[in-house]
Length: 311
Ligand SMILES: Nc1nc2c(ncn2[C@@H]2O[C@H](COP(=O)(O)OP(=O)(O)O)[C@@H](O)[C@H]2O)c(=O)[nH]1
Ligand SMILES: [Mg+2]
Image (cartoon, rainbow, N blue to C red; front, top):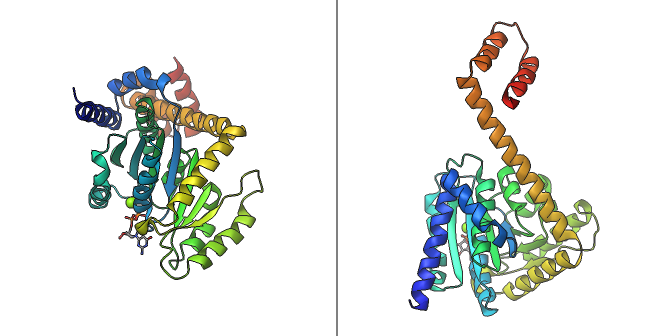
């Protein structure tokens, strides 16, 4: 087999694995059981921010920088806010297509359609597949500033918050409480007027919202289209990862993620089995009737249902 074929086969296997994960079900779980031990060795980078600020373009440029260092890089583009945004996602893929011939680059879009356990859980698992295949750097692109984006942003070791000048994004970010999640701030479209002003705004508000710690989030200005500021961004990403590793922060963050994931998984499983019992178990159906007929209040019935589920 030629190197090219090996690469093709590997990428095909990864794509298939991620599809299995998206579909959910027992096959996905047995796959994850097999690969889990080999995962956990990558630098997970989240990049989030409003649509149109240039996140995909930044990633595109970062890939070039990362490949110069001969590291393998995987990209998961997640769009949880718009289930019908096939067009935008396709746009991402076309732009990044130049990289798809490169053996060290894997790019995949994950849209938010019908993931039984929520998209964050599926992304967790997709990351593990890339990790198991030796991808050193994994970049997760998410859109917007909503709750599900926050959940995904928290999947990363390092989170980049990308904004652009003149759009009021900086003010919006400050108001909506997402400043806290940024480890690195990038004002992209540095070629447009107001980039310095936006950077100053961010710097000033960082003083207010983030506790002073051993890591001071840098605020960078980039022009992703021309590749300007990308070297500095890559540098900052490495510095942040080194900081995480040399302090206990990497372990703390990763354990925090495991806690959140376990809680999420357990909640999902209990919810599923609860809904199933309510539909099918006579004792549970009787509880529903009792609540309806005002013989029991929902709180008491819920306690009884928990006991029922535990049996
Ligand atoms: N002027 C300017 N436009 C840019 C820059 N980077 C990206 N763009 C453009 O901004 C638009 C949105 O970029 P995209 O990467 O898709 O943004 P995303 O939605 O955040 O992923 C595209 O038309 C890009 O070509 C930049 O540095 N300067
Ligand atoms: Mg994009």
